[in-house]
Image (tube, rainbow, N blue to C red; front, side, top):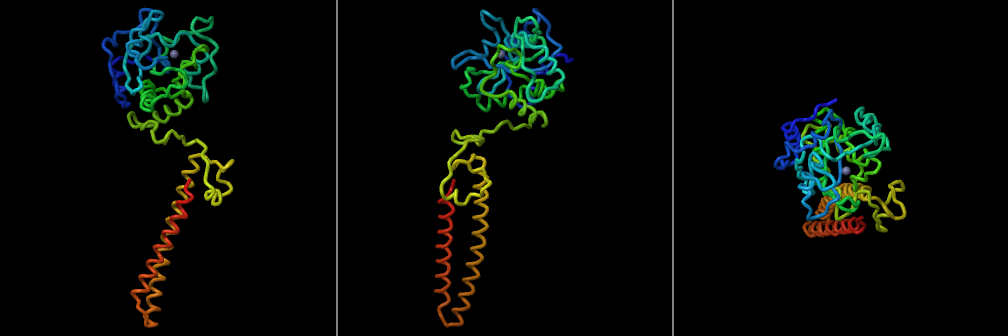
Length: 321
Ligand SMILES: [Zn+2]
């Protein structure tokens, strides 16, 4: 049982988590508390807005539309990662949902996912979610193809962490609308299981410390899990157990292997330089004894070393993944 956060506490919690907060004018008195209970609160529901570019999505979430009066959520999280606060209290976002899901959220008793919902708004066994859940409406077309910019996704995790941390809840207090109601598809484009993993990582740290999912996980549209072909040179060098399948490896394996090759190359080069130095010294001594021109022989040995190193470098880079 938790008493809803006051507007000031919510704002403070969000700021402490490091999100950019915009208080939409009038949000502190914008709610549906005259239509039903607000609290006790038990969790956070994440939604997508089903809006594209050019929509006043914040205004829509604040005011609602002809079929559904606003506020449509506690806040609207736009693609630029800003959390626009639109409602302080009961909001029209969750609707009716499954009581077994509510029980699992309250107890935080489930594993990767709460039990599949079998109720929806208006169904006989549904319970009122608008009294129990904060809601984040997150700007996205909801077609499964519209991307979730990293800055927005990170803001969604942090904003949810702000509420969970303020109430002493874990990540299992956060669910997607599709986990609450059996006729809702949102949010689409990421998995709530992964969202809760990120939320757990965020909550393990002090507020404001979680760095967020980083952009460098993708390079030129390539994901670490992608399979990429490897060249013949690499195939020859490849250890049997390195995960090479049909001539392809994952980017992660390739990067790890590239690092191992680079380490070996560096070790070999160090060894070679030492050998050449010893050889140069030995040839110098020999030249003295034989009455040859030591400077000429040393210069020849040094040139030989440069040629050997250049050849080694070519062999190593020629087979780069
Ligand atoms: Zn929804």
